[in-house]
Amino acid sequence: MTADRLPVADRWFRVTQIDDGLSVVTEPHVHGFLRANIWHLRGSRRDLVVDAGLGMFPLRQGVPRLFERDPALVVTHAHLDHLGGAHEFDTCHAHPAEAVHTPAPGTLRGERLANTLGLDTAYAEEFPDLLVDAAPVRGFDPDSYVLRPPTSYLPVEDGDVIDLGDRTLTVLHLPGHSPGSIALFDPDQGALFSGDVVYDLREGETLLDAINGANVPDYVDSLTRLADLPVTVVYPGHGRPFDRRRLLELIDAYVDSRTGSPQGR
Ligand SMILES: [Zn+2]
Image 1 (cartoon, helix red, strand yellow):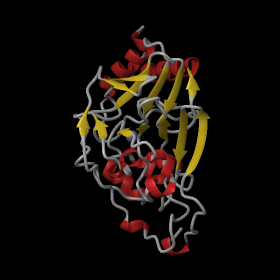
Image 2: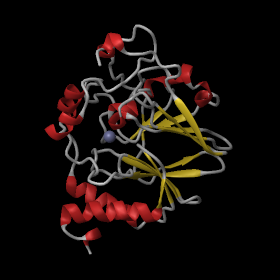
Image 3: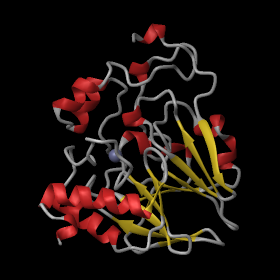
Image 4: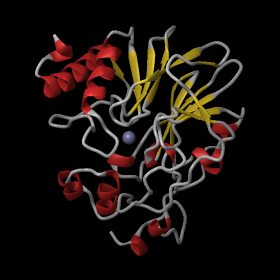
């Protein structure tokens, strides 16, 4: 689709309430590969947003209630579909091994994205020329899209605890998809906000480890570590939440495919 034929979306973001304390924001007009989840957690003392979408349209304008109580932001890693809106937040947490200030350049063109991320050509062949099917505003030029780094940055390390008042989240450094990929674990609810460390897959798909900055042995170690955590529900960086049974299936399938035995057994 050429840019000048793009329809203008009625609303850029879709908000889905999961429960009283959790909602998710997505960008439905973005190609599935780049359509990431923006999680909003309501705490008794503080709110937290996990990941910030592509940054094609201002979150503050599109979903003002995300910002009602000046939330902290955690970006699970510095890929464009998670980091794009980070510059709108006063506080952005990320792992120091992640290049949040010098991320790979952003683009909405399929072939260029495959090149900048170092994806293999099989991906590039599946991508449409343009990775959005609508414009957020009239006159939007997809080629003007840039990935802006966050304006403020606070490093978080493995084991750090983010306290929201009535719930706490522990930072897990889980490299593999990227060097500084992190997930957040709520031990009371057994909830894992996993970023791109693990997300549900369709038949024949695999977790994304053939990309610049990825490391297969690290990925195997990170997933093996996750299998031992008392996770009951996963809120991933892409797609729907899933349960522990599915988490262990995904972990076993990945570890088996890369080492020849599920979880090294
Ligand atoms: Zn990613």
